[in-house]
Every structure is written in C-alpha cells, then in structure tokens.
Image (tube, rainbow, N blue to C red; front, side, top):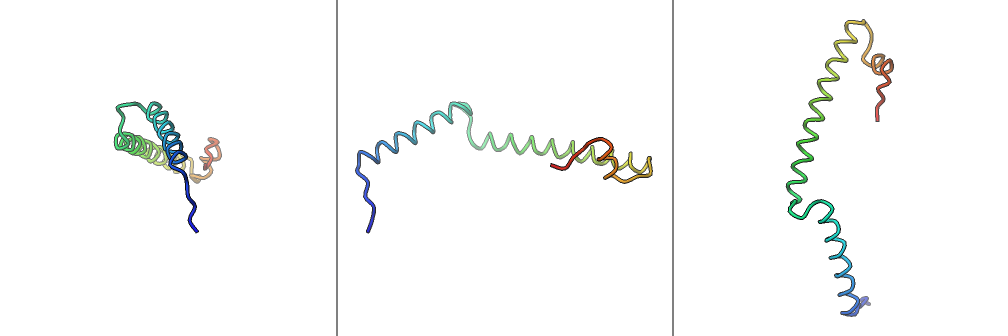
Length: 82
C-alpha cells in the first residue's frame, strides 16, 4: 500500500515550499550564500571564544591576587554559567 498524491496537490505543496524559500532568502539577503553566512558565524564564534578566553585569564589572575577561587570571583561578579 502506497499513499498517492495527485499532481495538483504535489504542485501546490512545491509552490508552498518555494514561497517559504523565497521569504527566507529575502530575510537573509538575496545575494547572500549559505557558505558566506556560515563563514561569518564561524568568525564571530572565533572572536567570541578569544574574548571569553582572555576574560577567564584575567579572572584567574584576579583570583590569584585576591587569594580566592575563580568560582568565588564568578559569584562575586554575578557571572553565571548558562
């Protein structure tokens, strides 16, 4: 037993999907490729990770100067794990 779909319903479904694609493409930009978007996000994540690493290094040094733990500095500064 196989489900059958009429050619008309298939065409309607394809048109609906194409309309969704068109809306999403306009939202991200007509000339924007998926590869460019992914590349930009990877670069942003790289910058974020570098900033986070530098911050953790400074927090570690602050903890050493105050002779306390990094966890305590996080608590004192209301830095929460998300």
